[in-house]
Length: 131
Image (cartoon, rainbow, N blue to C red):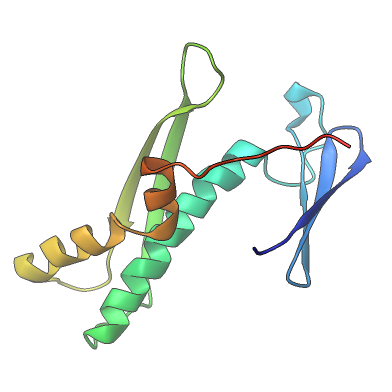
């Protein structure tokens, strides 16, 4: 299994260390944090959007199409009931240049099966041990 470590820093902020990379996760000021980084929910949504972008970029490169200007515009909303969770994610994949309709449909099929999206549709077994 791949490993990462999350350590408490201060207030509502945590550091994440994975494969030699480190970044800070925090809460916004109005939620008691110092706004030193994205929230866990923002990272969750960004993971999905980045995965979609990565798969789209691979598809475009494989077909000799440009990736410069490729972007994923993303919005999310929390569910209004319990348990607390993301209730909706909307993404708009903006592809540089013109894509024929056939390529557009194929690209949509590819990005709808990115690893993060697959992991949401078929959730992993999660174990939390408390030491």
